[in-house]
Structure formats: C-alpha cells, structure tokens
Image 1: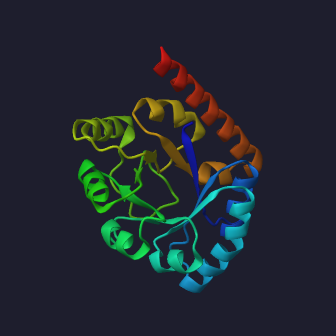
Image 2: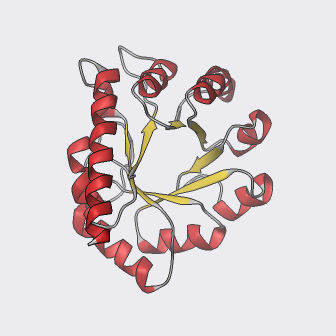
Image 3: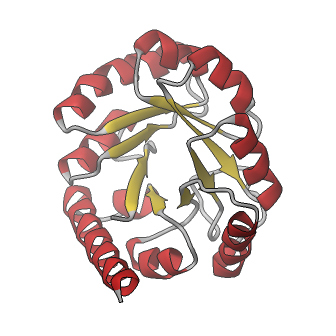
Length: 218
C-alpha cells in the first residue's frame, strides 16, 4: 500500500495536537510532529500527549528535528531537514532501533542520506506550499522521475515520500513516478471535515496501491 504520512500543522482552527488527533481518527498510521517555531518544552508536552494516542491507533510517531527528545521519550523516530543534524550523527545517537528520515530536494541529498543510514526520504517540494518557509526548488513529477531513476541506476533502495503541496488526487501520478508514499498537511486541515477527508485519502491510497499491485502482477 502506498504509505501516507501526516505532518502536523497549527492553524487558526486547530492546534498541533488536534491536527494529529483528527488524522489518527481518519485512519492515518504515521504522524510527524512538526512544530518548527515552538520551544522544546512545548514540543515535548505535545509529544507526550500524542505518544499514547498513536499507540492506541497503532500509528508511528516521529518528531521533526529533535533527536535527543526522540531518545528521551522513546517515540518511534525522527525526521531531519537539510539544516538539521546529519543523518549519520543522529544514527550514532539513536542506534538502529529508531526510524530516521531525511528531507531531500536533489539526488545528491538522497545519496548523502542513504550513506548516512536513513530509513526513508521525504522528497520535495512537489509544488508550492504555504505550510513551509524558505521553500527549496519545486520538483514536480519530472523531478521525482529523475531522482527515482538515478536511485535505481545506483542501487539505492529507500522509500521516497512526496512532500510539499501534495493532495490525495496526486497519489496515482506520484506512485507512477516511483514514489512509495506521500505526506499531507494543509489539504486535510483545510477540509470542512478533516477526519472525513483523511478517511477519503486513506481510501484513495488503498485504491492506488491495489491498482499498482495488479499492474505488477501482469
């Protein structure tokens, strides 16, 4: 099944915790707690609230950036941006038991993360997004195809998750470009019913996965 990650985002209507809670209620099995501008104490407080909730929903919880906090709270893992701690350094701190993901915008980024011991790549941005400042160059489908082709050529086998302005309707095209997952945030929270929207997205993910599964069998 094409994987689906939800990245927390605070809006005028919803807190970081509420955004994650709604995603979980809608069936999402992977939460990235991203609170870029928040103090560490606040991140820890929300993570402590989310940890049992994710366990209840049998969902993975990764924190954005805070490697030491991941180790302290024993959540599932960490996602590291290009300006955060290097993957290999995080791996030395966390060992093999934790998930470590890294943000990439180019094939060279992917190679560095792979060599550093990353478990997956968050690759983007797919298109313009308002949920992230200092946006890297837009990739689009052609950018993803070029990166995944280079990965195949060089024998780099890592899950690649599309990030940045992605919607449910992009899933089929992104799977066709070689991606194994997508990360959503704004498109869910802008919906009138975020829980219902996440359920719809999960259903589309299942349909896309089933379609590609059948194609691979033929």
